[in-house]
Length: 276
Image 1 (tube, rainbow, N blue to C red):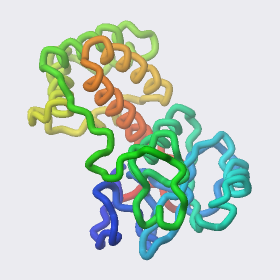
Image 2 (cartoon, rainbow, N blue to C red; image 1 turned 90 degrees about the vertical axis):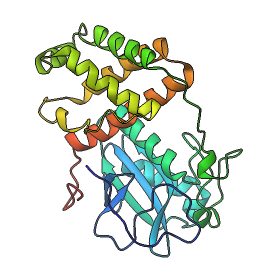
Image 3 (cartoon, one colour; image 1 turned 180 degrees about the horizontal axis):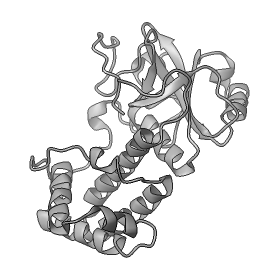
């Protein structure tokens, strides 16, 4: 699933970062994830409440819940800004897997910094929306360039150790081990591909030029595989990489998990299954 390509002019005060969806677009996508418009149903998923400012939809609050309908009703009654009508749009994405909802929410909040979210925030809300909705978060950097960036100190040897340690454990895992063993014929070649991927991700090299999503399309993956993948990767990254590099690698894996699952297990959205 690819993010919507929006070539329209940016909002006047917009910072670097994801462009909010256009209010007149046929489909709504936030951070590359497809959302249906309207009040959410009584089921598990992720909800984005927005405010239209000019031609764009700015997220005011993002949340995930086992029951989107009841949580949306509660928030609209309990949150003063919502009760006052400062959010005039609602978009939802049905997601049964709780861990996927959690990572999807973190991805959305980290990219858009909605003023009524506090957890997962990376910076101040966009000036357009902050002028209308009081920002609940405090002591945040003011610009996208300051958004928690850390200097990554990693070596090719550390990446090599991380990759081999992860696969040594993963291949013995009763849940995901059989998946790897049935789809990888040449392990040294596979190690090289994965090392190149992380070399590009952490060190900025150019040895990897493929798509990590495409090879997984035929693997008959299940949502629970991703939970185990993240847990094992996190353990081995923290053991073999320096703290900042480990945090960056883990964040990348969690983001990939959300994106992969969005593409492999699309939600049932009326008249909007995928985005071009």
